[in-house]
Image (cartoon, rainbow, N blue to C red; front, side, top):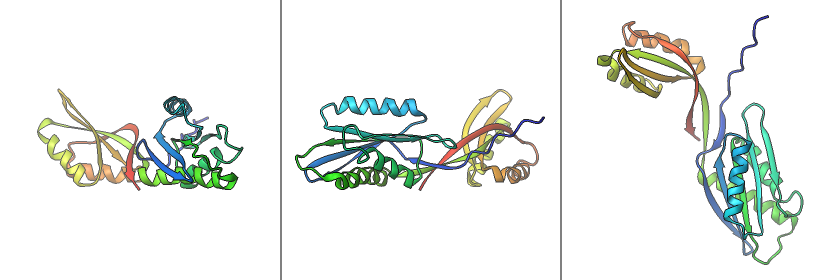
Length: 218
């Protein structure tokens, strides 16, 4: 029985970079810390680091989403009334369609109670504004092809690849020639082989070398 082929990965959104964004509501400070993570272990380590850094805060509420096809989600109210912090934070991540992202909102209480509705809005706004401030990017899966050319042609071929819009991810100078790794969207692989043959006069070919991702700001 033939093996079932692995599904082609799909593009996904994640936060562009780690960072913080602070808002103030009725004298309470809500500091949202965001970071990119690859799994639940990294997310929990980031959360532990923020809690250690802000040990004196009233609350360090959390939410994270990790994984592409089978996503794992977790949230915590960290002492706030049930459902008023972690859940609205997680809902923002879901609504924005991001994954591999962890959010911690540190609250320094300002002495004025916000009520359940006010807390939901505050924690959700803290994450939403932080995502807007730090920005998102789309990670797009591409086929990775290895192209080997002689040293004399390597510079021109690399320039031609970039000019044609292909992603050059790595260059390796070897005795037999220069190995250029190129990222090509899956639907364009056949067209790439045709382009490469024409561009190099049939002296180079692309060999499958796995998959990678390119990152595009959105």
